[in-house]
Image (cartoon, one colour):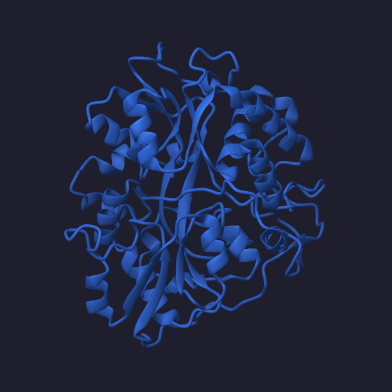
Length: 409
């Protein structure tokens, strides 16, 4: 249903492209970093200058959508699940939907003029912004923007220097799942998965992703090794990245499975081949629906998380229909359908009154700012530190990808 992750070594061409997208291209700016910390006036990379669409015009008759499975359903997966056909009838824009399997696939396909919009996750969104693959948006043309809580707007994964690059869509936490019949006492700390002497060695599971995997290690180090000075798990200098990789390497012998497919993670928990580790809420929901003794917890150290954003291709051939799609997909009633089908917190919290399961938004903490603040949402690592530091160069996404591939080989 959702994304799989990069596990193979990137091609030289791809690495070069990623390097260009991560702080070495496009121009420079000074001042406050996208992470919100104050800069010291040092020169920083900035995205290519582009002007957002000023006003909506007539639809072009089509829109090409690159999306995660479950975000643009047209009835072909389940006849009862279709919010694309009503969109086409209402707008006259024929929706051509292509499902992407990875964030890297999205990065490669955007910016070519083939697609108009993409449901980008935070582990690719800034790469697209700095590579000039996506354009800033005019939030005045996003009819549901006002219904998105302020705490989801202008974040490091969907804006740069106060310029918005998309419409928030939905989000979720990277929780810890555990078998209630095997893991005792119930855990409240990630220590049970990071301790090399964990009693659950061999049955620990991690999500297979450079951004989430290294980010999760950094979140744990923020609590357990404050002397490293990590303030943002996606802004690691070389020493901090080395510490995160060392933690992952020490953990590796205890990991029974790195999961990429949520169904694989669900099956492993139900079978008991894994008993504790990283998860999504929907995995726990599905496992418990199958009567498996599984629960989840947000550990005391906090956690990583993902937040998806509809972004506009810089060479969109159908920008008016693209805006109409972003507005349709974030309507309260459509958001309610997507959130329940996909298993996430809807960005438009007016959807919460329209879900079939009236407890859905409580389960996913959709309007819970305090809960949201405990999560470190995937953000593309860049050489210009996303925490605003200017006295050091941070490691970029290409560094993380190579380190993760080496770890997994």
